[in-house]
Length: 283
Length: 350
Ligand SMILES: Nc1ncnc2c1ncn2[C@@H]1O[C@H](COP(=O)(O)OP(=O)(O)OP(=O)(O)O)[C@@H](O)[C@H]1O
Ligand SMILES: [Mg+2]
Image (cartoon, rainbow over all chains, first blue to last red):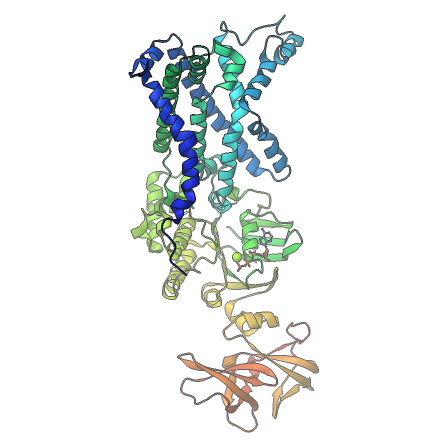
């Protein structure tokens, strides 16, 4: 048999590289060029204009606040759910299936569903009204109630995207041989000690993937917030959208996109550092 | 006091019955070896005692306390797993100290106990290594050290030395025996290796297909197997079983008449290789030599007699080439008798 060509692997990945180049790298390069171009001239003017914009710092603050509240909440919830389902024997598949339904719903649809629940005449208020807690239509999502609007977005995001973390953690838990938990149990570890000293350390790789993926996606939060609050809760991607559509200024929109990219990259690096996965410490 | 009482334990995995009404009493401080072929249910029994598997029926009592419904951590025992289950994310020292840390011993106590256990198993040079950087035998020793470090009253070991080389195994065996005797640990020790069982155990329980078929002191088990299976399984080479017909207290193997103090009819004469005297007398039972294997201290002679394979031992310098006919005489006081149908030992007539 002839020796295998050393070029074969490259040949095989060429189509995907080409695909990425055309549909990702090229638009990415264009975005960078756009962000640094004002009236056909290279300049940092777009960034200056972005930073001076009234909504920039609130958008930055809201986006970070959402990430800081939503991601830990989702990971904690998903971890609890994943450990719980691990213990189930009957009906496990059904629960797994129900918990992952939100994965199949687009974020805009999810946002609209929560709008139907939380709007002035929505289901939530109807229930509160019947319980006698409120006396008439009450707004939760206006610019006058930034805190409830914020938490409405948090609730909708948690509902919508926890399943993603959950699925990754369930897969990760299944990869851990059960002999370790058994050994821990025989040697006197309580359920909490078992989780803390055995499950959690062995789950690190999945936890890291889930955190990176979820954090990056959380910085890109848009449709849910937009559906619930419009611009009442300014966020980074929402601002990019506004500059692009309403203001017809692709330069500043590109600058916003650049900022989102940078914080996503930074968060990835943070997670790679904070959760160190050492292959030789895994089964 | 930590004796183990296993009371009619049954374990079925779906339709597979792994344990059928196992009864076993291990008195406090005894070293009991569980010996049996692969798949006979040794690991399953140990896991039920540890609480890692739930029995289909039956009770387990440790130190007089019924632990059948308690989780493993409330049973106050330690275990060496067949597949080691050494934690990959902990160093050797952390692994050995795991049980002590879980029960909240202070750092100095843990360090001292880890040091002692590591020393005993010759793992001191590796204390800071992670298991991925250890050989199979070293990992196994970590698993043993982890169990010894907690100084348990009851210790369950599932083939704990299976992965060590012959010399190290011999050494570890002696160390284990000394330490466990000193501490008075009640030990259940699973092994395939019957020399190990013979050498270590106060008593041996032989299992076959989910049952314990005989429990006895090693010498008694060797001398008086209660079934054909035990005779064949315990001892190398396995016991010879020669079919004869008993009549009036005597049986004939070719020209040789042997005493057969059992019921008349077809019976099996069980006799160990070392209890057959090879001779060239005319009156002896004929044996056609097929293979001779020099074992160092003696020759192992395999041949055919009365239509079955018979193994005997000859002095190391004997001249017994294949194809040579020779004669043998069993030592009458060393013979056991079995029912050829049921494989059970027969009552001897006085
Ligand atoms: N979880 C399980 N599900 C179904 N059958 C099982 C399970 N565990 C063990 N068995 C069956 O039970 C029987 C006893 O198994 P066990 O592991 O106790 O054997 P063993 O004596 O330890 O064998 P070995 O010496 O090879 O380790 C086997 O037939 C095995 O296939
Ligand atoms: Mg086994």
